[in-house]
Image (cartoon, rainbow, N blue to C red; front, side, top):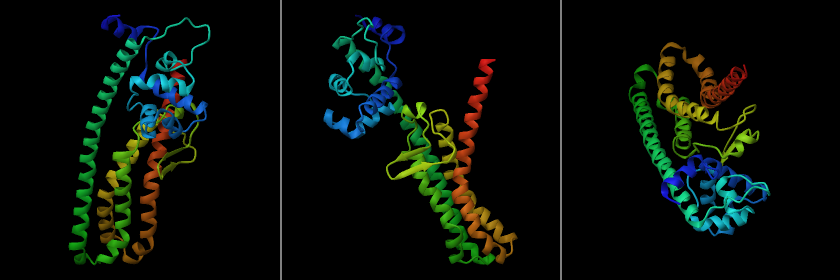
Length: 288
């Protein structure tokens, strides 16, 4: 089979491979076999991080692992590459080793392109994040340095401002650099109201995470982590100028609570619900 025929096979033929479907199929079969990512990795003598990357579509297994992986998931290599289980009476459409190698090479090229795009996105987010940190640090320095002229003491700044600035900056490390850009496929088929990543966990009542609302949730979280450290010191300064000290002393802790907690979860909830409503309207229009 020539390369052009193989490319046609990949794009339009019965053996077409969908890289995203490939990862979702691995995740589904692993759960059906009641295997954890670590247990599957141990069967293949690889790290569980490699399995996680396969399921998220960030990388692909080496061709030498196709048969062991298919055996561990109790499917054929053809089913593995198709990303679905075939009925028993389905005509044989098995890939030869050379065809499998070629297809995996093309998939790896696609994965490499996605990794390159992801690196560029991380660089842009890094610029925004460190710009945010730089501006907020400058504002805090000005508050500490010039605050005494307006009756703002250093210990008041530490108590009233630092928490509302430091927490979003800390969350920003996760939101800007480490959080997944795409959820595993089972989030789209099951109703899952939490996201866990190591010791970090996000759980919002009434919100089911999926790959339709996840990009909007990420934007809302990153917007919070970028804007709050910049805007809060300026807001605090304006309040100190125009709000009586006794009132601000009483109101300050509540303002911090609103900014630190509600400021994060309310935008995320609105983003997730708004996306869900928008998708529902699109479905209604399509039915009409």
